[in-house]
Length: 96
Image 1 (cartoon, rainbow, N blue to C red):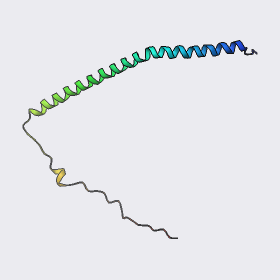
Image 2 (cartoon, one colour):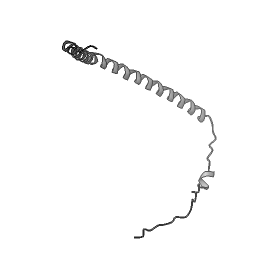
Image 3 (cartoon, one colour):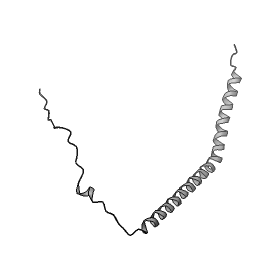
């Protein structure tokens, strides 16, 4: 069985503290760059999706503009959907 020495504990604490400060320093340097790249990538993806949606809208618009006929479905407006009758409503009163 080995015992922990005082110098070993101090070394371990020193390494942990040094790792914390080095990590903190490197995060301050590189994290803004990484976040900026991530935002740019998300912006590019968003723009591509918008362009694709606009192209689809333009294609659909061209397809429907060529037709001269308009069809209005009036069957649903004349016969409104009936609600289901589940049962009677029973009012209960508390008795003391």
